[in-house]
Length: 398
Image 1 (tube, one colour):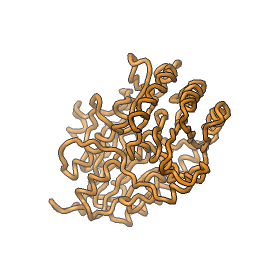
Image 2 (image 1 turned 135 degrees about the vertical axis):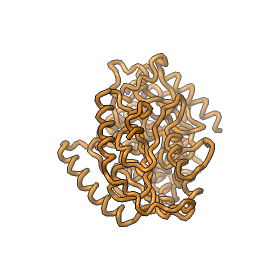
Image 3 (image 1 turned 180 degrees about the vertical axis):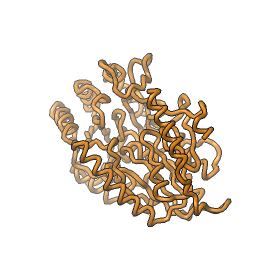
Image 4 (image 1 turned 90 degrees about the vertical axis):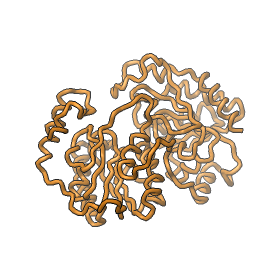
């Protein structure tokens, strides 16, 4: 109780009222049973581990970065993943993930459906997930999601005896090992998630980590090549541009994309456009019509063939979205155009070969999730400057 009430316990909610509500909730939750029956003895390794992150593709890609460390510490453990249905493709078939459980939280659901339907979807997926998770008998759950709402409460509901997660967004009283997320300048999101894993693996140090995905198989390479009308991706030099994002405010003006594409194709580079959905399809069609040399693959690739295409690219150029995180799994050279709505130092692709670009550094990061009227941080990025940076990365990779 003293820990929850302590001023040292901080809640990452900008509004004071919301912070006090979360604190009061944690006080009330202390009255619930701890549910720690079945905790393994000291030195005993967990048999089954449940990782949890219900957010989007990019977020789940970042969470895969903890898998190598967990596998080193617990080579014989079975690892399950709780995620949203919209991100299942990221870990489907992953060699380190034994099973997948789906939880579609209404607050994170971007589908164009009524709120009531999102609520019903959450209720249905929660019911199925609880049944599946209880049946597996997990020893340890790690809630890797650093945003709101946390999902450690589901691990408590399922009776998982050891529950690790961040306490900053409430429900910390239901965790057996809560950790306060203290945001530090320059610290990457993967390092925050590693902090949770280190609580159970006791690994020291802060190694550079990036998304951990298997190399796409030849079948996936073949589908990507067929979509391009090629016999193979191997030995090809091409630039992928992924101009879309889940949020319109993060997007770069169409005219600037056209100028950048004209510059790249003018230098003889094969430019491939990727994306999905009706809105991105409209944008990409406009870009392709303005420059007939480019190849439009919007909506024509499944996740694995998209991964294959990215893994062999000479360069990926995109905005603040999952594309840079996917390319970082294979350390493909990337240019990411970033806003100040999220801290670029924390959310940039974990890529030693990646460059983040933005304008107006004086107001970065603003951390205003609603953005602003001008969005000058991204809209004022000069396509000529991006083309120069692209040329430097392409020359370095040759």
